[in-house]
Image (cartoon, rainbow, N blue to C red):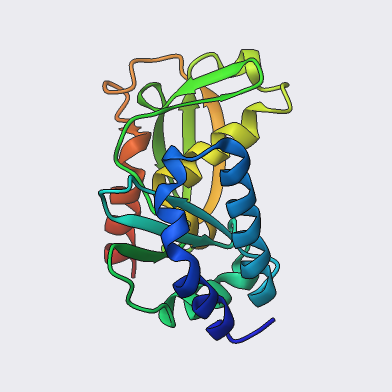
Length: 202
């Protein structure tokens, strides 16, 4: 590991090549991404990245610990020391989204707009537990891909750091009632619920 200075010096010297990832040959793109990962792993081999943007737009480099809380501080340290590079934004952790989306893993496809949740009570008011209702979950619960896919969707919705630090307990059930009549909350609103819960916890 280094203190991050070497990585940012390398990126400052090479960032222009990463502005054109959407318009270059796949083999060249793969080599650039491999090089970036090699340089990042010189700083910390438990961190990864997402990078993107069109050549005439702001570019983003997201540094992620892939939910591993042990390396959250390394992620924050690296981004805290990021240089100012025109046209680039540097972000710690995968961020939450409010957009509906679909996810597929093997033969399972799930749509976020069909998934709802209810909060669960806890003896510790600071803890957040949820029951997530999924259409036909009883048909996919025994598939090894179903729960990882659902957890990945929740991670995408609330963001990497909140998923690891804020959610204490998650369980899944089949959706068998009208979710609105049952008082359920759309899963895409989970981040807002977490923010509300944290601001009201005693």
